[in-house]
Length: 189
Image (cartoon, rainbow, N blue to C red; front, side, top):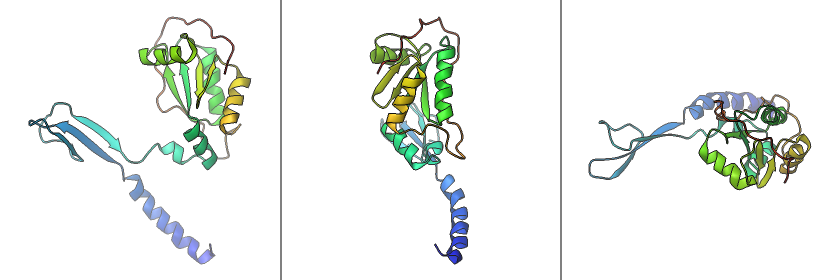
């Protein structure tokens, strides 16, 4: 791009960014007195049964700031880390590895949430943590070499990229005390 066009392009981009950031909107859904489902960007005038509010637009901000190769890896092979309050060091080592590599992941509490506990049981046959899924691969127990290999195969970078902020899970798992869980067996794929 010629130098004379760079400044106007930068000014235009700077002016558009606030407008794009505010493009998010709330959408309300409710059932009116006649039983019809209504949708609106403004809340109903009176309290309604089954009122639901959804935040629309904007997307997951952190993923748009990721390099393209990372975005592809996240889309093709999302990472989920199943942990628990009594997991201790192995779960922390798993979090640290993912953070060190800048891998965005979802953390689920298999010891504190019955749905997450069932998901772990269906993946590995018993309630043990940590368990990591990378796309369709499932790894039971923390073993850095196996976890790193699975992340490499999925296309995740080995280290944080220059300027990249360490990834954090969108919702931290509940850290409430839970009964101890037996130590996980060596990682399997």
